[in-house]
Length: 118
Image (tube, rainbow, N blue to C red):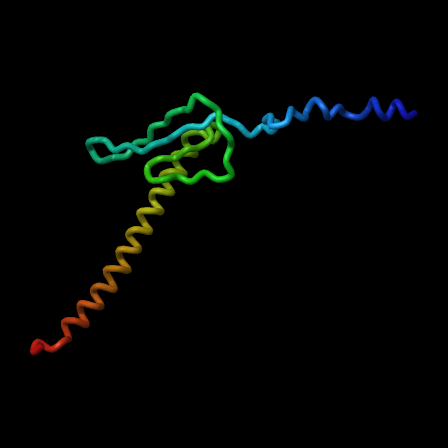
């Protein structure tokens, strides 16, 4: 009876690696996508596939016109993420500029009410 239980147990020593050895499957091929602008002023994305696999990160955030992402996501998904992020950044810039412009216009209208004698 005792020997049957031992035989049915899975052998976990083979799954464990040597100390310091990578055992989890958390490495994959990554790509770099970058937005370029043509002579007509239109953007187009260019994808470069990296030769080496690298560790999968917990979060991928586009920076400027570049996006580093896992290849399994696909170029369409990555391009949508990059463009949506870029659009949101530009909207935030416009919103900040509109707030600053409104503050400057209020200040200017206050200054115009000052007397001219000083």
